Amino acid sequence: MNTERLSFSGPEFIILSSEPPVTLQLPGSIVTKKGKSYLSQRDLNVILLNGQCLEVQCDIKSKARDVFNTVVAYANLVEHFYFGLAYLKEFWATEAILGSRLTTEPQILISGKEFFFLDDDTKLYKVAPEGWNDQPKKKTSIINFTLFLRIKFFVNHFNIIQHGLTRHQFYLQLRKDILEERLYCSDETALKLGALALQAELGNYASEVWINSTIFLRGFCQQLLQLLLVTYLKDEM
Image 1 (cartoon, rainbow, N blue to C red):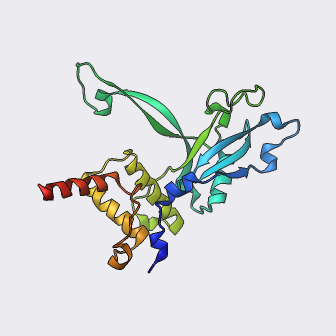
Image 2: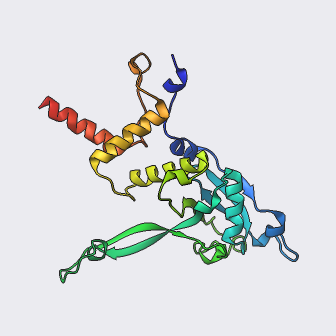
Image 3: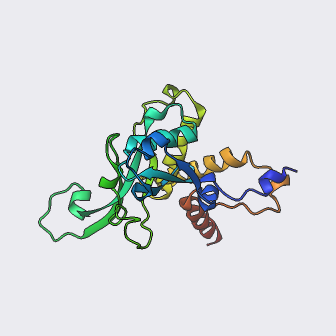
């Protein structure tokens, strides 16, 4: 019996997100310059697509390029040109704008958060949350500054991608974006994608392995569970 499957506890981006962050430091030539001191050094977090958190020690005037190069080197991403660093920013829009329709009727104001990519030459302090620049000059509470490694450029066909690790990053981002409803897909498509994700990570169904086992489905597809429940209820009616 395959005990590895029995001990399976969920997708990697859920497992790794609960682990302690890995600390990275920018090369000394970037962080420490003549006349600089520890007062100019800061910490920021970078979340990888697999859910892992990196704690990057940088300089207050470090550029996005410096952090990006350190992160992709750690993640061993050869085809790094597909990726970029992004930050989450809150936006406000009306229902009319989101639906691309013109109307004179009162509209509901809708808020949310969207990813915005950093240019290579962007200095981190320009996009950091308020108060991050002041540390540790002022003995205040720690201000969290989080960036996300995201796919910036998509391809027309996966055959263009040369490395399996790069393909896996595309898979992780699309899958997570669907789970977080950043990308829309129909219930039927969600059901198929959820089933394929289960098969990819757990293999084909084998009754001798799973008959007395509980599969941890969180993170595969919420729609999958909902549709299975609806189907079961319809069959029982």
